[in-house]
Amino acid sequence: MPPAAKLPAASQVEVAVDFDSSIQSLSALDAAAYRLIGTATCQVDRAGDRYVCRLVSAQKGAVLSSDELKERFLHLVADENLRARVADKTEGVRNVILALAFGALAANKNDAG
Image 1 (cartoon, helix red, strand yellow):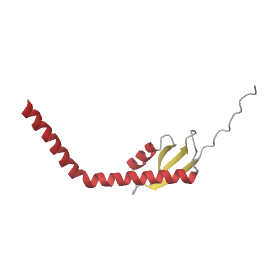
Image 2 (image 1 turned 90 degrees about the horizontal axis):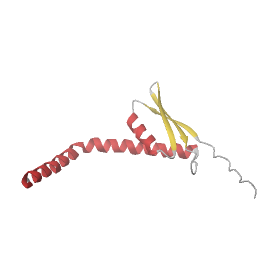
Image 3 (image 1 turned 180 degrees about the horizontal axis):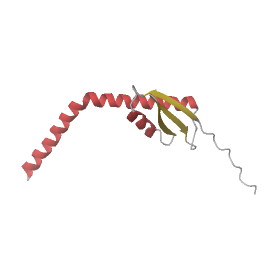
Image 4 (image 1 turned 30 degrees about the vertical axis):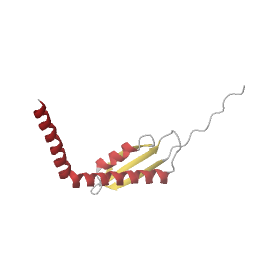
């Protein structure tokens, strides 16, 4: 029986994406990088007034092109920015809902006990 042929390793795709640090939050970049786990690694460095995100595709599965990887990361960053804006705008309402919910739980506990 002939030896098994080795498949060539998929080449890694590397791309750098930079952001103005006065506009883009580091927390959104970190969250977007976390959501890329399994697809790529992301190293975020500060270079002057810029954040430079170095993306390297994972070796597993289908490898995205550099443009696809960059586009996916930019979509995730935009999503994280939107989540942060919605959280900021709804914080007051969310706190009232939580206060009412926990207040009702405390009242029920006092009535039962």
